[in-house]
Image 1 (tube, rainbow, N blue to C red):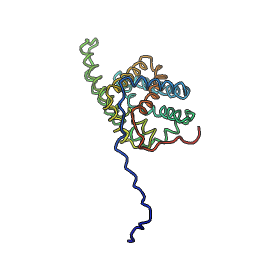
Image 2: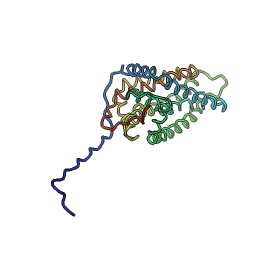
Image 3: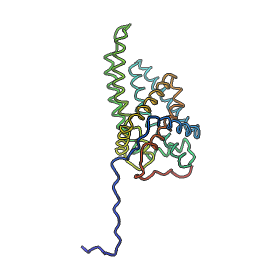
Image 4: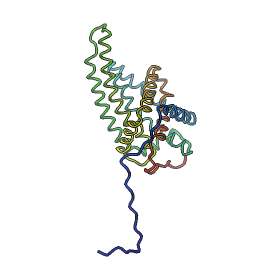
Length: 268
């Protein structure tokens, strides 16, 4: 084997990317700043944003009609709980809208779908994980049904036991999903990274920002409750608002500068 020419320049080896992106520590009041930035994006692209709100509204109605046709209250609660799992995936299009506004590109409903397709591979892996979690969650919800009172007029203690156990089971799955999805999908949208890195980054950032994330999670839960209480009409505005705010929470907390950017496709 011939020796390397000492005069030839050496090609520097590319430094390996870290296992996760570092995060910034933000105050507990940071979610209010994210909501304000999300509202600004909603106003800047209200047609596209509210269109996705209408999509979520329609899906919620379909889920409710399916549960009603089956005549199962437990099925309704389980399916609506699954909204916590499906919501982050639907919000990817809203991240795309904020992403394009940030780069001075005009967002469109069609373009948000086209850009989201580029992330289909990583999102498919994430969706597969969510599907497994959802199936376990649905199975757990069915098992909780054994605590449902069989009497025609159950007392308060029986109802409290049923609702308490069901809420505890749901809270466990919701917390796991929240930690994994809080920053992962925005990072996949923004940077050329893989699902594992994004999820680990998200969980690490959530654990290091417990006060702010507790406030943020409370806002999300309250918004979902308002959406349900208004027969899903409130979700038309709340869902895109929270989607845009989630994008700004990622930009505020995660430092993903080591990863190459994803660039918008073509012209608006």
